[in-house]
Length: 436
Image 1 (cartoon, one colour):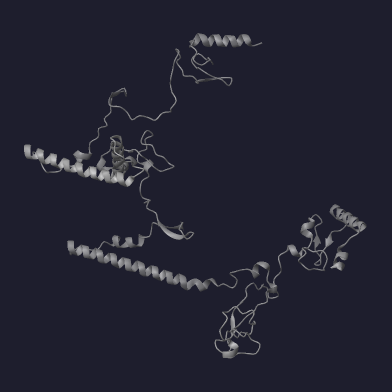
Image 2: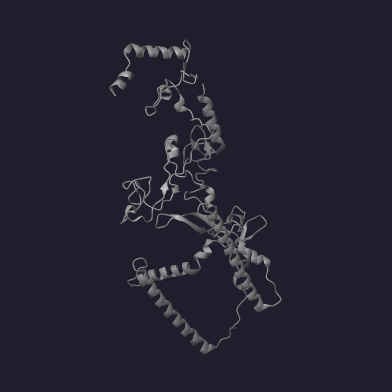
C-alpha cells in the first residue's frame, strides 16, 4: 500500500511538467498520446473520462478501453447465457466428500440449501440429490451476472398460451350450443317451421366486445380485473341530438344534459329526454317526497329529522302513505256507492296522455311574441344594458387613453349626463387647443 502511494506520488516539478505537456498537446505543438493499440487519444477529452477507474486493474499505460464496448470471443459470439443449476449426474449411493445432508458433490453441508434432514444422505443412502453445474461467471459483465431472465426460453411458455386458447374455443363452442338450444326450444313452441337465425347465433362471438382490461383497486393492493364498458359506441352523442345553439345546455366536463334537447318532438319517439326526467321519476322522486314529508312533519311539531334519524323518517312516511291510501280508498268507495261509476274502464291511448305539451309560443310576421314566452336565457348576475342619464350607449362602450367612457358623447366621467354630438365637438376642440 505504501509502495503504491509512493508510485502515484508526483513532485511539484513533475506535476508542472505534465500540465505543460497537456497544454502543448491541446495546442498541437506535441503529438497526441497513443494507447496500446496505436490509436491516438484526443487531448481535449476531459480527465474524468480518459482516466481508468480504480476498480479496473491495468498496467498498460493510458487507454480508453474502459469506455469502449468489449470485443467478442474467439468464436465470434460472447457467451451471455449459462446453465446454472442444471442437473448433470444422479448418483445412487453416497460418495466420499459429498454433502452429508443431500449427497451432492458440488457443495458441503454448510452451503446446502435443502431442508435439513432428520437422517442425512451419508447414513441412509436415500434420495441422493443430483450434482449441479457451477458456472464460472468471470467472463460475464455486471448486468449479465444479475440478469434474472438469463437462459430463459420464450418458447417454453407456448404450451400455456395454447392451453388458454383451447379453453376459450371450448367456452365459445359451449355458449353457442346453449344459445342454439334455447332458440330451438322457443321456436318449437311458437312455430315448428321457423328456423334459427344465423345472425343471432353469431352474436355469441361478440359477447366480450365490451370487455376492458385495466387495473382495479382492491383491498389486496390492486390486481388486473375485467371491467365492462356499459356505453354502446353506436349511440348518438347528446350534443348531436339538436345542433341549435339555443337548445339544451351540454356540460362537457360531466357529460350531462339536464334539459330535453328536443322538447317539441313526439315523446313516444324520443330516445333521450334529459337528466331532469330521471330526477322526477323512480327513487329520486320518492326520496324528495319523503324529505318534504319530514320537513312538514317537523314544522307541525313532530320530532323527526331526515338526516339525524333517516330510518324513523322513512317509517313515518310509509305509515303516512298507508293511512292516506286507506282514506282515499274509503272516500272513493263512498262516492261510487252514492253516485255510481260513469267512467269507462278502458285506458286512454298514449297519444293523448303523452303527446301533449303545455309549452305554446306564437309569433307574428315580424317575429314578435303574441302568446306564450320563450325559454329564459341565463344571464350574468351583474346588470347589463342599463342606460341612464340620457345616454344612448352603456358605460364601457368607449376606450381611449387607457380609460373607459361613453361612446355616444365620448365622456370619461361615469354617471354624467349625455351631451350628444355637441359634447363630442367640444371635446375635440379642447384637444386641438391643448396641442402646441
